[in-house]
Amino acid sequence: MLAAQSAGHEVFVMEQGDIFIENGHARGIVQGIQVFDNQEDWYALSDKQDMPLAQLDIIFMRKDPPVDKRFIHTTYVLDQAAAEGVTVTNPPATLRDFNEKIFASTFADYTPPYTITTSQTVLKEFLSVHKKIIMKPLDGMGGEGVFMVTEDDVNFDVIWETLTGRGSYPIIAQRFIPEIKQGDKRIIIIDGTPFPYMLVRLPKEGSVRGNLAVSGDHEVRKLDAKDLEIATAVGKRLAQEGILLAGIDVIGSYLTEVNITSPTGFREIARISGQNPATLLLEKAVALHCGKIQGADCGTTDKAAA
Image (cartoon, rainbow, N blue to C red; front, top):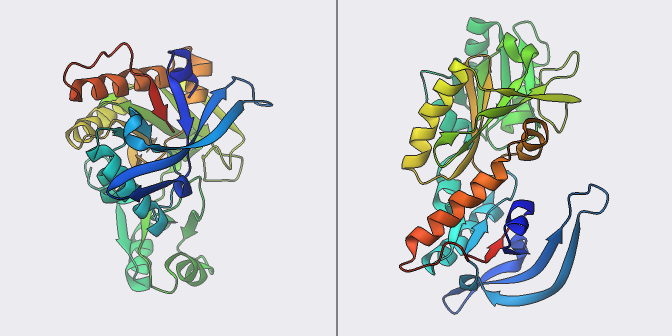
């Protein structure tokens, strides 16, 4: 929003409950927003107004996981908005189709050994082979529900019960990656191209979670050769699917997640590196929108909603 405002665009906000379909058209109860680069006082809202979403140029869908029933219904409204000419980032169908943990597993050359299952037996066998594993839900975020489990862990059964609902929901288990001590790397990919700086989230002492929501420290580094190799391979697939924005997670030399719902890290990367991925994202989104509209003036795209 800061980047859009700085570029002279008019910015609106709306939440899931504010958008709807009426008589075949997508509409929204929106509020204009002015934002400030100040943690204590960072926004001011105007009065609510009901408008056709087709009056907007670009919608950035930034609802955090889980991609649950409510989230899915929201993407249907955004499908209608897209059909009426709005550029939605990321495209609603991709938000439905690509689970962030399962999508990462399709890049088998870069992922650690893993299994996705509801089965207690399969998970126990996987643990017996790898001795130390990470178990986590498929729809979590921010380190929620992440467990490190060792072969002799007496809590294995209750962890399985908690995460799978006693076998009702699949989860992912991955071989533990010791390099987590050096940080969990968030690499931003925009329009298929890796951003040159990444956010490295450092776990607290005694923890295996590097997420900002649970960790006390972070730093920004340039991508090394292996990081760039992984991000380039993932970026190629993202571009093929029309996914403009993603944040991949890399631990050591292993890809663990491909986040396309609401990847974070922009603010930290911009503050420390001096290069702002939000500015690049906005430029790419505007260019994409203008490229879809015959005769559009790309210098005057003026309405974006988050």
